[in-house]
Structure formats: C-alpha cells, structure tokens
Image 1 (cartoon, rainbow over the protein chains, first blue to last red):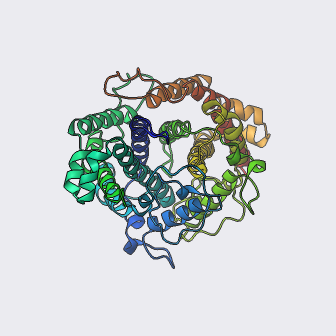
Image 2: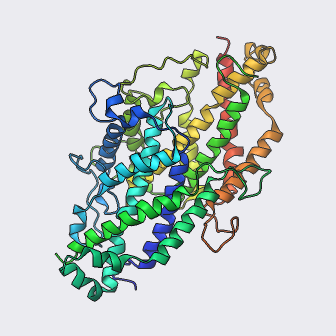
Image 3: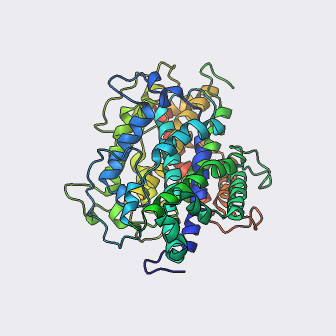
Length: 252
Length: 252
C-alpha cells in the first residue's frame, strides 16, 4: 500500500536489496587487507596524544566533517560517535518527516561496531600488517556505514508495516510485548530467501574475472558462506531489534 | 625479473588487475546517485562561508584527516589537495624506497579530477538531486582515490620496466624524447586485452542478481561499454603519461 509520503513496502524492499550489493562490495574490498591490531586496539597505538583506537579516531573525525556537511540530517544515517558532532552548515531539509520523532533516539551503532570488529572481520580477514593503516580504516568505515544504514532501515520497515496494519501492532505496542512484536515482524521463509540471495551475490561479485574463465567459475575473493551467516546471525536480527524499538515508541 | 626490493612486473600487473575490480565497484556504487550541480559547481553552493565547490571542501577536509594519520606517506597515494596538508602523526616508514626520489614531484590529480567530473560522471549518471549530498561526495571520493591510485601506479610500472631494460630506456631519457618513451611503453595488444577484461568485469559485477535469474543474465547497473572507454581514453593514456614523466626524471 502506498502512503501519502510515498513510502511503500515495495520501495523499501528494493532499497534493502540494492543495499545488499553495497555491503557485499564493501566486504570484498575490505577482504583485501589483513586485520591490523594497531588499528583496532588502543593498547597497540603508537601515536602520541591519541586516546582510543586509531580506527575510532579516524571514524570520529571523518564523521565530524560529514556532519558539518549535513550527512546526519537524514534519518537513514547514524553516526558511530554521535556526541559532540559539529552543527550542520546545510539548512534543515524541508521534506515531510516520514518517521515518528522518537526514531531519532534509536542508534545501535555500538552493537554494530562490536559485531563488525569482533565477529565479522575475523570471518573475512586474518591478522597481519598492511602499511597504510588509513586506507584500511577508510575501508572499515565503508563497511560500517553500509551495515549501519541497512540495519537502521528497520525504522522505515517498521513504519510502513505499522501503517499497513496498525490494528495488528497496537495491542502489542500498548502491552510493551517485545516477543509478540518480534513474532509479527518475523517471516522465516523471507529470511531464508534473503540468505540464499546474498550468498549468490557474494559468489557472483566476489569471483575473479578474467578473459579465459566462464562467469561463475572464478576463484572467490571472499567466502560466500559468510554472507548468509552475517545476515542470519546479525543483520536481520539487528534490523528486527531496531523495528521493535521503533514500534515500542510508535504510539508515544 | 625480481629485484632486490621484491618488485616484479608480475606483482605490479596483479595489483593493477585487482585495482580494476575496486574501480568498477566504486563506479557501480556511484551510479546509484545523480549528478548534483550543487556538489560540483561552486556557483551553486548554498553554504555560508564556503569557497570552492562542496565536493572540493569535503575532499580537502577528508584528505587532511587521512594525511594526519599517514595516508600520504606511501608513494602509491596522492592527495587531490596536497597543499597545506597537516603533518603525519605516524612515524615515517622505514622500508627501502623503491622509487626514484623525483617520483614525489609527479601528481596529476588535477587532470584526474577534471576527467572524472566532466567526462566520466556524465557517462554513468544524469543530472538530478539526491538529498544527502555528503553521501554522494563520499562515493565520489572513493572513485577518485581508486582512479588516482591506479594511474599513479605508473611510477612503479616505469621503475620495473626501467630496471629490466635500462639500456633500452636510457638513450630516450637522455634525449628527453617523450615520443620514443611512449612507444617503448605501449603494447597495443595488451591494452586491447585490458579493455575487454574491464568490460567483462563490469558485466559480471554490475548485474542485478536475484534467485531466479542465471548469473550473467541480470540487468546491468552501469553500461559495461563505459569501462573500455574509461580505460582506453583516460586510465591507460594517463598511466603512460605518469610513466613517461617518471622516466624523464629517472636518471636525475
């Protein structure tokens, strides 16, 4: 069903499907590099006057620039270090707000950061060194932002699902019944299909293509089975977590 | 032939081939967005106290952070705005210098910037608006950095070719004969092969993959014929330009 704001479940699904490609490209690119302890562990940092890990510092400072130029004025973008961001120079956008204002209080990037560094990275890279740490950090930021956008898109998913069936969701929201909401939001057959699709995409996009091999036969730059694991264990559960958090505030 | 510094034509070729994937991924991602006049044209800027285009400002400030954390200490990386970059906090790397010191004076990023904005972008996107300009700028920066790295890799190509056949190159270098150097560096059959390979890669990586279509049959997110054009018209000629500039200084 189309709403006055133009948001439909179909348009959201198309965006989520396109975002799969972005996530997979970013992970294939990240898999070029090893896991560099000096980048992730503040105890390994060798830089004077820096607290926190090198990645934290690079992400925080890059986010500050992006905030200044308006990145976080849009409800699909969430900073990993939202405190003390500079004000935006860009005038506030005048488009009608699609989401309930309480959406702004939901940011699970700490969980996403932890999942990415401690669970996902070890599945696509091994410990090692690559001299230019800044290039690796830029690649990490690409992955983190792609995952964060995908997972926080749950706010839009929840809004459309709520508008399409508010009488179904309202009792569970009023009862603050997370389990009931989670059940309403879960479609196992759809989740299985998503897991199969992202695995197929990783096989296609990750292959080494040359002029003599057939498409589909190239060696893969990333283990395709990482993708259904990423989606099944983290991306889809965290998206639903965002959806539940949003719905719990939807009638405030 | 392997040199004492571990640099071989084979290892450089492998890097160039892998960089094709990075460039194609970045262009497919950029093709999601339109060409936004306010991002590229300083006359369209609406931000107070900002001179230059929005993209110039975002790139300059992002490069300043990356410089601080050491990105430009490595000879494969070149800033688009190299003036007034902050000093690096990272201690200088202690690896043996592979390139002749004169390499540092070669930076053709102004040409690459101009080619990217005025020639390449119109081949992959149309004028339009997308609200979050900062996201588009980040995508532009990915493309620009990938192209810049690829083209300036010509310094390494030239160094290895020179070491492998210095008696062949030295007379043309001493005579400052650019045409003779360009001839020595040009292998048309290799260039044709590269153009075919990048077109094939764009077909494979740009396709829309779903569970019902066969790999190779999906609609493409980017016109694959843009890639042989990009490589034939700009990437390979500019790489050879870098090679010639490097060789002209190689005996200084």
